[in-house]
Image 1 (cartoon, rainbow, N blue to C red):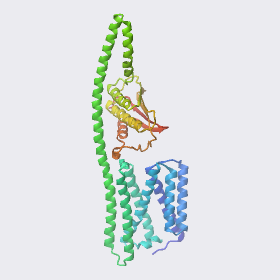
Image 2: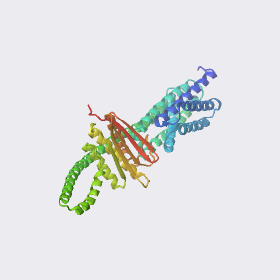
Image 3: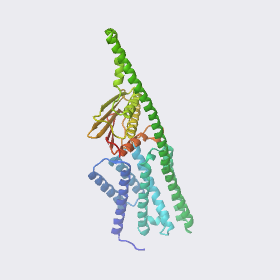
Image 4: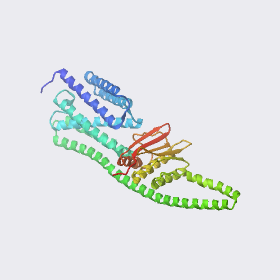
Length: 432
C-alpha cells in the first residue's frame, strides 16, 4: 500500500472538509433564504472550514469532531439564513441524520468491495479517501432528495409522517453500526450477508422517501378537487349575484317612480321622508364594486358581503379608465382566492379592528390589483397555514400564482406591521 506524504494527506483532509462545508451551505441555501450579504457569507464559509479543518488536523478525537460539526452547522443555520426557529432546528436534525447514515453506508460498501475493515477507514489510505468521496456523493444525493421533498407541498406533511422520516434513518444507523461491528469482529467476513443487509437498509430508506414523494400526487389530486369545488361555488354565487343585480335595478327604478309621483303631486313632506328611507338603500348600493365587468363585480361583491357578515370592514376602490379585457375567468379566480385568503387572515387575526381593502386600477394597458387585510405575522416565503388540512394548504396562493403566470403578470406578497399585502400586475388585453 502506497503511503502519501503527510502534507499531501493534510491537503486531502482540508479539501474534504471544504467540500463538506460547501454541502452544508448548499443544503441550507436550498431550504432557507440567505440573510447576510455575499461577503459575510463567504467569510462565514472560510471561518467554519478553517475551524473544522483545525479540529481534523490537530485533534484526533471523533467525538470532538462531531460536536464541532454540530455547533458549526447550527451557527450557519441561525446566523446566515432566515427561517423560523422550529424550521432551523428541524433542518439541522435532518442534516445530522444525513451525516450519520452516509458514512456507515459508504463503509459497508467499501467492506463488501474488500477495500478494508471499518477500523482501517479511520486511518489514512486509499480506503479512507474513497470513503470521503463516497460520503460526499451520498451527502449530495440526500440533500437533493430532501430539497425535493421539503420544498414541495410535502413541507406540510402531518407530524406523524415527519416522525417516520426521522425515525427510520435513526433505526437504520443503529442497524448499520451493529452489522459493521459484527462484521469487523467476525474474521470469516461474510460478504454476502453484509451485502444483503446493506442493500436492504438502503432500499427501506429509499422506499420511505419515494412514498412521501408520492404523497404529493395525492395532495395535487386533493388540490384539483378542492379547486373544482371552489370554482363551482363561485359560479353559483355569480349566478345569484347577477340575479341580485337585476333585482336591484328593478327595485331602484320602482323607487324613483314612486318618488317622481310624490313630487308631481306636490307631496313634498312624503317625498322627503321617502328620500330618507331611500338613502340607506342607496348607501348599500354605494358599497358595490363597479368595474364594468359583471363577473369581476359579482365576485368582489360576493366576497365583500361575506366579509361584512364576519364583521370585517370591506373597502373597494376602482379606477378603470377603459374596460377590463383580460381573461375574466382567470381574473375572477385570482380575485376570489385572494379575497378568500384575506377573509381567512382577518378571522385569524387578534386585532380588534379588521379590514379588507381592494384596489383595481388600469394604467397603460395594465391592470393593477392590490389587496390588503388585517393579519397576524406571516412568512411570505412559505405562507404557512393554520388549517387542519395541512396537505391542502396553499391552494389559494398556488391558484393565484398559476393564473397570474397564465396572464403573463407579476405577483408579490408582503406582510408588515400586522398588514398583509398582495400586489398583482397583469396585462389588460385579450389573451391570444
